Length: 167
Image 1 (cartoon, rainbow, N blue to C red):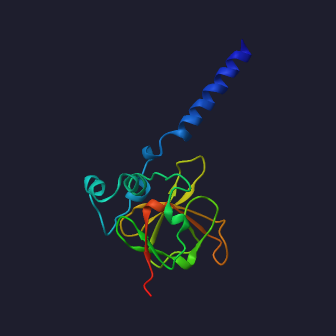
Image 2: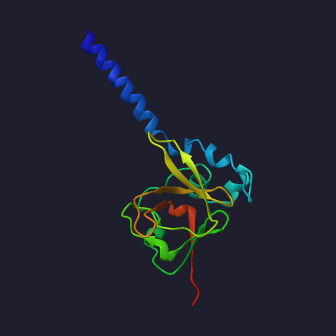
Image 3: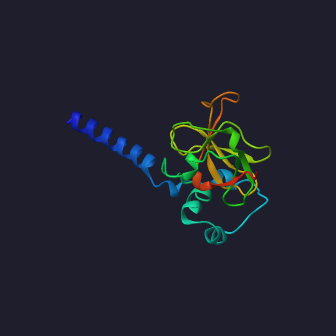
């Protein structure tokens, strides 16, 4: 009897933990970035009209795109990566590197481009990166990047747009 009870409790605890981790990313609580005041604000309906469905779920609902799904992962031209929602320049292409993670990664950002907040969605706390001007969710920052900063800004490609440098 005791073995069955332990097995049941272990299974129940595991199921609850798995459900919390596997819940749809679009249900993520976006309150961290929305607590700030941003230069560009729009209603939810206005954002939905302006953005594609994929951009909306990432930028406004803090979703994460599938790895290796963004053409920007393989973008190697000189230029600038900007916020897909408000076109604020965020990253110079010279700071982009191949991280092997499946998302566009950068080791530094442009001045006055990013905002940061804590993301407690997973079991551990992560540093969430958002656009300083519109609050759009871009991705996360990790301390396993290359020199000179040692930082890896792991960005959702759908939250960015690329502007090639002009000759």
